[in-house]
Image 1 (tube, rainbow, N blue to C red):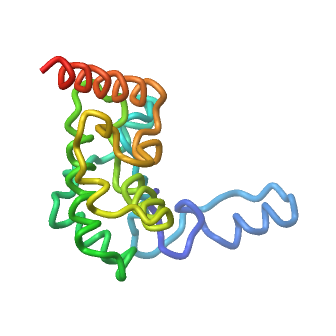
Image 2: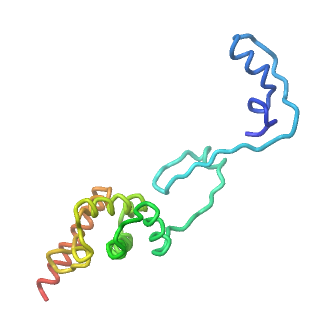
Image 3: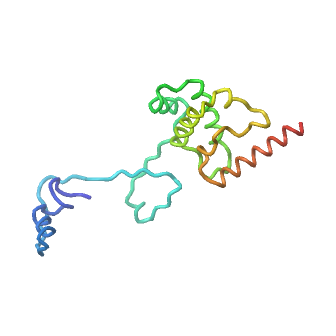
Length: 169
């Protein structure tokens, strides 16, 4: 919206307020003064469908997903006392999960932070995350990372196939 800084959508503020408060029909006059551009910033992810009429009025700026070092800094802000080895192993698992082809919703930063909180509450050690034998392919508490039922089934199916391949070898 554009208009004078001290106005109601570019119209004289007093007339607009009187019309609203007294329910009088008052003629609107354009506001005078320096015009300012007002805006709203809306963040969204790719999975939300927005109407074309809304999208035409938007300016998009793509911000790439945080790399490992940036994610480490984000985690440090949220959990300053977390053990670095746990974060290191968790990030490896997290980024491996994000690389699985066919995921409908890749785990995001908020899922990582939730998962880390659960790992700390359940006293999961870095060694437990690192352990990759055929019986322990699925990371503990993976439901915090994968929020879509199809993704959970895909991941479990891939883990089952990997386990079966390991057993055959």
